[in-house]
Length: 512
Image (tube, rainbow, N blue to C red; front, side, top):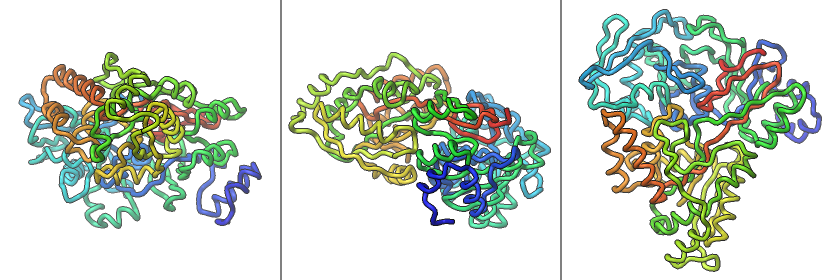
């Protein structure tokens, strides 16, 4: 069975054939109404949602949020709601925090969830030794005290985004007693959370099967079984949904989305999400240190044409690191499409179409709809003004590795997710030099960003981030391209609630 090719599967066109195939691999097939099978676009490298590159991959949060619960919850419209914390806040002096912990919750192994689990999880997240990618966020807390279900803690400094992070990347509560007993290796073999689904079976790079948590505090899940099939190739995801082998899929080419949702038995939803398609610029190679080259690259890109032609109108051209949904979006910050200006800028540095500046640009292929094709189009636009870029394709995991090591190519395409909509988690982490998630690292930018991290005056803080975004646009330190719309196709027997974060969580899927 393992040797059967995808071509054979597509040629049969039979869902039954695919069902037999995946059953042979141990997957519960979506043959009944109690099983939901999702053709997912990325693999799951690790079950621990708080350490390593996987923890900051926005796409994988759909799986993590299904197995684990976060301190603070988030609705599909991005509004915050109680999670494992029912209430929270800063003290009047902004020197400490308080949190009220939910009662009556149990872990998947049947043991009770307690305030000590919250304290342990936050302490572990703030410890540099654990490998949490955003340890610097959690590390501000210390001196935890528990009084009944109320937790208090001191803070080294005021962070206006702290509680927002509790609904975001690495903001998950893990079981103190169980994790301490089995260790990191044991936890990977048998993860335990408090989420709506429990891990039933896992085959790396193939599938993850989950069973409903009968004791979930948030109510009974709609499906008894959920299967995440790991299908990184977009064409294969189209085949999964068209053959009936999967019930729902996402991030397929927009023309395929339009075609599939029009077919009998299928439906679709495609709404803007909090993700930005952008080009990181790494300030290592001499070509990128030339402002004329950076600005020319920005002015040579026709974003409106990319959205209209490649993305079939699904998407929003943007010129800052804020989407219209973010707190610090400023519609007045613009970078005009002006190829003649791009030529003039390049000419100042001695470049022209006959004598182009040369560098490499990296991109994923199939991770997001038309990501590779978008970069192809941009490279074509650049060629006309005097930029010759060589495309290098990599997997998203490789992007994380290179970015954290400050080893990206001179330019690198990436999809930036900012589900909590705060400028600190978009512009801040994408552009602040000390951040492991930035590519451009320079003292002038850090001097503008630094004071904003702990700004108590919210109006002043947001105005400050708007000014930083304008400066980044003027200097072309990053090139924002589009706000994505996420295409989701599913069987018409289902109802899918689009999530503003882009996380396709099983709890947002129900029977129609």
